[in-house]
Each structure stands twice: as C-alpha cells, then as structure tokens.
Image (cartoon, rainbow, N blue to C red; front, side, top):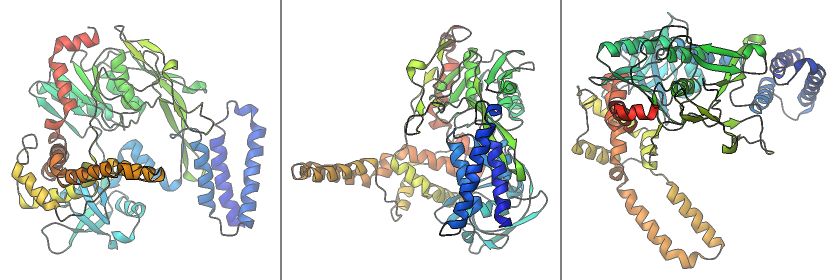
Length: 550
C-alpha cells in the first residue's frame, strides 16, 4: 500500500498544481479545492481497493488530469517526466541525435530527410534508406517511442544503425556519434528571381529572429529588392521571436503585441527593441490555415502597420499564450495564461473555449460579435477570425488518389528507385519529369495495390442503402449503375487525370534525394500559385500600394 500512496501523492501534487490556476479567485476557493481533492483521493482509493481488475495508478490519474485540462482548451497540457525531453525539443529545436528524419510506411521505417553537416549525412545515411535495427535491436519489435528514445541521447555517445538500401544486396551497418542537433527555423532562403528574395520560416524556436535577419541581409546583398516571407504551415512557437522578426521591418519602439490575462504579471506589452533591417523593402507574407500563434502575430502586426501584403488562406486563429510551470517529480504543466492582441487591439482567437455549448463543444466566435479595427492607414481589419489575407488564394484540395499514392509510400519508393538509376539530377528549379518518365511511373504502379474508396463512392453507397431502406432503389437502379460504371472508367485513368499534382510530388521527392531540403523546396516553385501571386503583387507596385493605401 505504501507504493500506491506514493503514486497517489505524486498525482495529487500534480493535480493541485494545475487546479489552482483554473479558478477565478484561488484565495476564495481554498475550501473547494481541498474538498474536491479529498473527494478525488477517496474515490481513487475505493476504486483501487475494490475494482475487479488491477488499476494502473499512472494511467488512471493521467486520464483524469488530461480530461480536466481538455475541458479548458487544447493547449493547456500536462507534461510528465518522460515527455519533458520531447517538450524541450519542441521549444528549443535542439536535441542530441544524428540529424535525420524518419517516417513509417506500412511496417517499414524509412529515412525521409538527412540534415547536411550532421552525423547522419557525414556517416553516409541517405534519404530512402530503411532502418532495420538500432543498436542491434530490431526496429519492428520497438514502439515508436522506444525507437525515438534510443535514437536520441547524450551528445558524444555512439549509436549504430542497420539499414537496407536500394541496389545493395546485404544490410549495411552504419556507426554514428551523437551531436547537438539544432533544427533550423529557416530551412531555406534564396532568390526567386534576380531581384526577388524568399524566406521560408517553419519554426519560432530560439534564434528564429536572428536566422531571418541573417537571411534577409544575405538576400539584400544578392540584390533582393522585394521579399516573400513564407509562414505557411508554421504552427508558431516563442512569442519574443515573433517580436524580433517584426522588428526587422518596423521601427524601434513600436508595439508588436499585448498579452492580457487575469493575473497582472501576464499583462505585458511587447515592443520592438532594435533598429530595423529595412523599413522600405516591399514584403509579401504567405499564410494558410495552418499558420498559427506566433505566425499570426507576425502576419497581423505587419498587416496592422500596413507594412506588407498578406496572401493565402485565413490563418488558424490561435490567440492564446501558454507558459510552462514546473511541478513535482520533474513534470510540468503548460498553461494558457493570456490572450494576445495585435497592435490595433484585435485578438484573432477563433474558438471561444470560455463559453461552451451545453454538450461541451466549442463554437467559433459569431460574426455579430466580431469587432472592426483600423490599420495605420485606415484599412478595415477584424478580430475573432484569424488573420484574413489581403489577397485570398483558394487552396485546391488534393484528390483522393494523390493522397493514397503519397501516404502509402509509392511516391517515396519510386523516387528512391529513380535516384538509384540516375546518378545525377539537374538543378531542382529546372528538373521536370518527362512525359515518358511519368508514363514509366504509371506502368510501375500497375501491379501495386492502391485500392481505395473515394468520397463520391462512399456517398453513393450511402445513397443505395438509403434508397433500399425507402424502397426506391428499383426505380433508381439504372441511374446508379450508370454512375458506378462511369466511376469505374474514371478509376482506370486516375493517375493520368491527376498527373500534374502527382508529378509535382514525384519531382519534389526525387529532388530531395540529390539536394536535400533545398531540393525539396526549389522543386515546388514552378507549381506554387501562392508564390507566383506574391511575386506578381510585389512587381505590380501600383497595386501593392493601392492595397496598403500608401
């Protein structure tokens, strides 16, 4: 029983540390806190003593903690001692490892990216390799968590991989020495044209501002007179790094963001602290539905000051700030402590977690409650709905066949085979599969099993079931069979009907085999309609100035 009491004490301390933040006035709620913790402890003891099967205290208490925090918002989370290292990696972009990214495809684990100048690259690991063993342990016998734990470790310690490589008959043994791996916030920057710079920012971990600054200065030295800042898919990160990035384009002493919470110390105004790099270079910022948090601070601030044109989709709409707090036994809790507000005063939070429906679901903030704000030059912007782009560019959703060939690894495997057969490749910007090469891919796919049910086929099945239930199927049968026959014909040619989208994925995957991250990025430029739109508006300065009311 001492074991159970110890486990309960750990959980009670964690719960007590978290619950204290969930009440409006903790000083007035001590009795309620003590009472409910006592009830919880009594309940758990009874369940532990009397439940028909053994109760795992860690699992049971964790379920209770997660359910409690989930009732607040998705971003307030408990981080156990076992999860702290992964949490630290997310926040710092640093870990002890070899510098490679893997992905499961079926029962295989394959290398999808190798970072240049890190141990994986220097010791010969390559994209397309399949990992069979880690330190002699068969990967198939390990969970993803166990494999990740073995791969990462103390800097300077060795790790051994057994891999299978296309074109090599026997498995290969590779030895690595772990190094401090720093994931770059800017995986790519370069020139889209002789006068057009491009920066892709994917993280807001430490040094994000410095990396963007260095990239901007380098691009200007190369002749950049315009800049495309790509925040698509950037889920955010450290708030102060968003401030640092805004500071590159707006003067010192300008407000970037306010944070406001119920605790006075969380009410903070963040202003730019340094001299900017360039106040005049025309900027186009790309966002999409996955641009969140710190990405929205950057886009929203530049929009509020009319400092750049925002293009793409409406952003995610996360206007909440989280702060980690240490708990007992090396655990932590990440708590939403404030909302943030752009310079005009708007909070772009989309979902209202405070006022839930009766069933507990969360609603978007209704249009009737959204407020109008004005940018520096008087343009209308609104709160409560993410960052609305100045130029909306609808995104074409991938067809089911495109998703299937990618997720099932067919694109990946074909690219690996292609790279084995072609020792060299043209520069990724100019590389393009010929019609014959794409026809070779279609032929290669013929014996593959990539059966799937499209949304149309699913809906048709539901129609048949409903028509049968309503006894109207006999009258509709001939029409339904015609549709089924047409769908069957379309299925035969789907790889050709969606050639452009699949070809783009193939070229990106193939280019990464030769040029790594740079290849993966540059191979997509010719297909990227958002980048093209950004370049067009930057070159059309009368239109650029009209949008910003300059």
